[in-house]
Length: 142
Length: 428
Image (tube, rainbow over all chains, first blue to last red; front, side, top):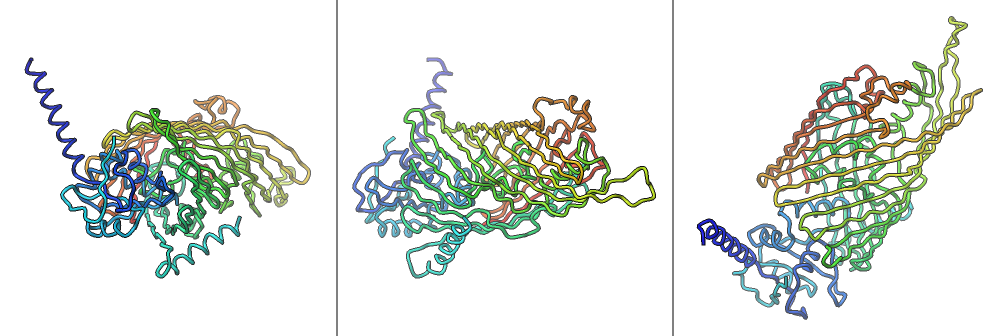
């Protein structure tokens, strides 16, 4: 194998590793009463863009997020497929034309988890290292 | 319809008072923008040659969910833009939104009109990078009445599986014209009264406007937005039909040449114009790749105007077609969280069958052939200073004066000119 090919292979491996690390920076959490164990990326994206407002059982979806931090940035990049600025502009457009209200944003994970514990339709994300007590962690399906 | 709007307001305001103790939670947001505009030649949109700060907007909105399916909201907006607005507080939008499912929802009230990529958010400077959107597609002088309608819309979103997904909307109602005596309508009447070539009254005839009303009879249309399977690529198309009616009563002072010593003869003139929007189509493409954004839009319109002219002893009726089009391409790049740059090039032709203006010049409708186009190259720097504060600066190099209104400055008609803009916005 020539040197160029090796460099490309190593670069590709490093890139994939970086993607995995980024993808692992958050965990999706829902109220403990939530029936399923998994959620698709597409459903997550639609929920956080306000396009899906109800769960399969007709219950209202209550998306919540963090105001800032690595988990937030990684979630917006990997799931919403936007930059944080583009995500903010998307919701500002909805807000100032009356077409929607952005997900409630919490300053810290404790408040976010507390909100999800109290609200059956709530869904949010926290950083991977945070302990998800009394809430359910969902696996993401591609 | 007014009762519906009033009801919307009452429910939302009631919601504000109740929010502390009941289920209703009211989201309150707003912004204030202040701009400055200066042109090297040609008064453009307002008194721009001298530089003007009459370029601002203030808005506050209230949105609440009254049930799992029903959302109510309204926004008050005050703006000043030359002789338009003058800080009068208007209901910008106010409607109830009943969401049956993600595939179908209904909105009723005063609704933002979906057209192109930016029409709905044109009042809100923070939603875009340029201060002045490409004027051929988003004419600033028509802003007060072309952004929202009173009526109903059906909307939804559906997956196309491996072909991406689509948003769609159909709507019908009428345009609300808050001010029929300034801005665009002032320009229309002035053109008819003799401030430009090809007018109804003899050139130089002094006319006094006694009354002017503009009524939106109906407007309807639809929009479709396709998020393609290629990540970041979006295509959209919308189509609008409508009808407006303008009635004016003026007095015209006609010189009686045979008797020069006599005072000018004052005659009343009634002018009625039915404007049928026969075509109003916008095609858009947007591609986002990381911090890079590429946008292209093409717009074309056909207005059929039926003019009725009634002066004491002279009556006539004439029909005119206006076939305009415009397009632009924009590239924007975000360098950091606080700095973004954008540049667009746009072309506008008020008569797409006479792009070089020569036909109308020969007929005497134009004074210069470069009134037949407006080509604009812009550069904007956007500084997001904090989460709430925003500052923009912008420069335009313009060729042509198709959108320079002669009543603002009939003496200056330079072909090549520059425009400078600054704007600061605070939002919460």
